[in-house]
Amino acid sequence: MNNSKIGSRNFGNVGVFLGGSSHERPISIRSGKAVYQALRNAGLHVVAIDTANGFLKKMKGSKLDLAFLALHGTGGEDGEIQKILSRAKIPFTGSGSKASALAFDKSRAKRLFQRFKIPTPTYEVLTRTNWKHKIEKWAPPYVIKPVSEGSSIGVFFIEEKEDGYKKIEASFRKYKQLLIERKIDGREFTVGILGESVLPVIELKPKRDFYDYKAKYTKGLTEYLIPAPISGKLKDQLQSIALRAHRLLGLRDLSRVDFKVDHEGQPFVLEINSIPGFTETSLLPKAARHTGIDFTQLCLNLLQMANARRLKKA
Image (cartoon, rainbow, N blue to C red):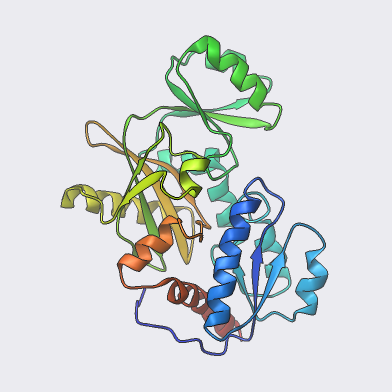
């Protein structure tokens, strides 16, 4: 992507889609408000649209030319809002519905990663009917996570087998499917993609045992090292894998790929986020800022990508 500045040209009526009804609603509201304010300050005509309920009437009444998606989790990253906007012929930031759904389903994404030799921790899908049988083959430590969820919501570690059974049973009261995954000990990194450019590698050093929801969204609970203090070889490796994963899933405009690197220096893709956070503590804006793209410019750049698709169809 060309990182030259994009001015606040006439994008028409822009809707910032935020909120929704997923577990990540509070983060989506923070992301959406930040984007909304940045675009307003840039002189754009912007309307905020909360998709929690009854948003279609407001969406149609706003006569939108473009949509900026600041939704996280179910209803935002799973391809559903993308289908609605596509049917309404409103170009939007980020990936299309099929690619979004693929990235949001960790089991489908990991299946592709394995097929195309993108390193990812060994895993299995657990259901309410098969989990007790499948888990017998697994020795702790391992990770349990929902198949379709973000922001580390619902993720927990099992260190003792007896402890695991109760936690898994409780988790199945919320989720139909879970992922059991080999726990990787080592350093944690993330790599953002913007357009066709790979952003600098960030190392995450949480002050808690696990980079969980609280560590992600509470100031001061995680140290971010940018650029990450790693060798050129590992940097190139992480950036190359991130771009391959982004392209393999058919994503566009932006994504963020989360990694663990074990003590032998082997990287593993944990997951890929099709709509990364846009809060004050979010990682993709931090990485973009390091390359000279401030938050407002980042939002304008993404709108320009959506606008280019609109002009192409005109």
